[in-house]
Amino acid sequence: MKCPFCDELEDKVVDSRMAKEGEVIRRRRECLGCKRRYTTYERVEEILPMVVKKDGRRESFDRTKILSGLKKACEKRPISTATIEDVTDRIEKRIQEMGETEIESRIVGEELMKELHQLDQVAYVRFASVYREFKDIDQFMDELKTLAQQRRDR
Image 1 (tube, rainbow, N blue to C red):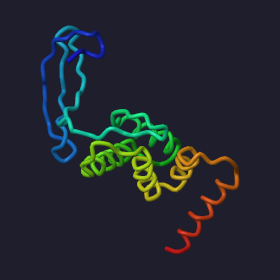
Image 2 (image 1 turned 180 degrees about the vertical axis):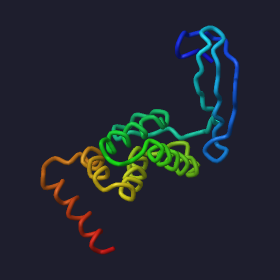
Image 3 (image 1 turned 90 degrees about the horizontal axis):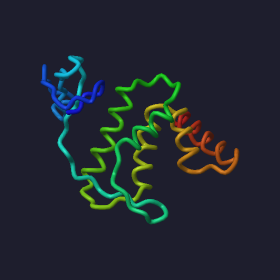
Image 4 (image 1 turned 60 degrees about the vertical axis):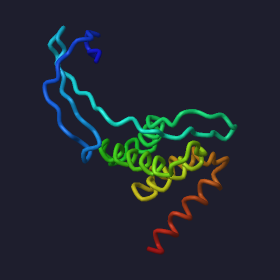
């Protein structure tokens, strides 16, 4: 493992622990070059589907894109990084459990929308405005009215 501080390739593992209910191993490492410590996470490499984009292009599933989208939507909201990571894990797990070799990007987006809808309505509207490509204020207001109605129906 390359040291993030000095690029040395030699290190030693100081501590290993299970994390995320046994799905991840957290390792504390010490660089043999600069003696600084850093943390790495190890997880089973999962077979995830190719994502078919709107224009027909195919690309590998990328969890960092989900994480990035969530972080942007939740920016300046009272939502912890741990919660965002948990949401990302749930979405990734559901997609993997579908067992498909290819999945439309729309399905990934809808899974994200479901999670945000339950998590934070402001973050949901932020994401929806980009994801659904609102063209004008009327589309934005329609989404807000739908949210308000759902809230009243509870």
